Amino acid sequence: MNKPKLSLIVVLSVIFFCFCGCDANEISPPKISTDLLPPYLISFGSYISWDTVKNATEYDVYCNENLIATTQITTYEIGNSISDANYYVVAKNKNKKSDKSNIVLVSKSYNFDNSEILDLSNTFSYNAAVPSSIRKIIISNNFSTSFNLSANILKRNTDLTFELHNVDILGRINTFDNSYSRIDQNYNVIFHIRGNCSIQGNHGVNGSDFSDSRYNNSESNAGDGGNGNDAIVVPTAIFTGCGNVKIFGGNGGNGGIGSATTTWEASKVPGKGSNGGNGGAGIKTSFFILNMDNGTYDIAVTDGIGGKKGSPGNNGSIITGPVVSAMWKSIYDIGKSGKDGRSSFGTKKILNGKLNY
Image (tube, rainbow, N blue to C red; front, side, top):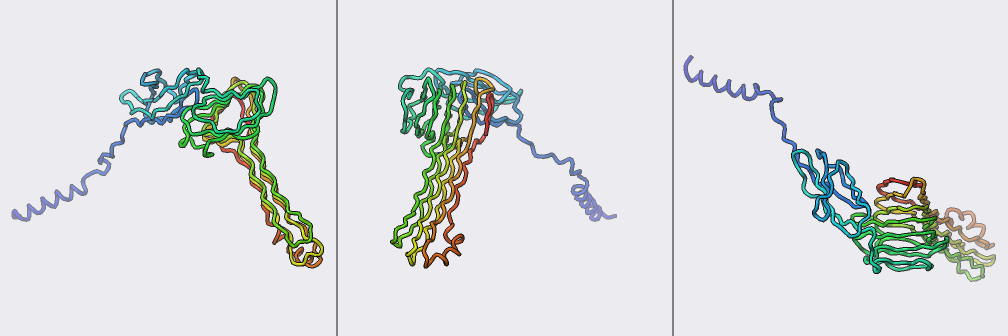
């Protein structure tokens, strides 16, 4: 065999073994990162909570840059605090640590200044915006009493506590933009309950009836029923204390009745029935936390009922009555009943006590 042919055979053999002789199983898979991701932290009044970090075995908890605890669970109980403080968490295992989590402000739970407390005890109403400088609102009476409240919570980053003692509230407690997103408004509203209390959203007004029976050929459609109010709309609702509370969404108002025609009206037809208002929700919140002093206390939530639709007026005309009455149901009975309210709890944490919903 001459040398050129031998060289060609060697080259082809090398190419063959490169493509066919390698075991595909010997190819190394891409490396998976074992770095620990920083946890996402959120405050819930007297404790903080964070998500589980993959490959982490424990977590360091820092308060104002000082290491205060190491734990294997994803919550840390703070308890009573006399001042605001910044907290963050670092995930770790034997070999690595994560970067810092986001920093959260944990509000003080007592030791409030007089300027930070709004005491409405032994009064009967409050209808105003709640500024961020107010940390605690007290509505307390020795005996059960009614209280008209419209508390519109302005933008803030510290917690707000309502201390309620033997009071039945009629009105609403809501954020300034009616949003309950924790992303938009990063704070807690704490309801400290003593005795038996209730919070009732306002009912919607009934739509006006147009039942004019004069001979004037001016029949009109009725007015729509008003929507019932949501009772509580806050980013995080935390219930504590030693009492029971009932929470009701407002009912929708009924639709009005259309006007009627009279015997001698020649060209007019009945006024159309109107829509009922929607019912309000008992609670709308991203996080609902129940942590009463013992397991027997009860939080009961009831949503508002939608208002009934209004009916058309009667057609009493001897001229148009027979014709219109035949089409009455399809043409003039067009009102719709309001929708029932529906609470939104987002994430629920029942630590102590009972929720009836």
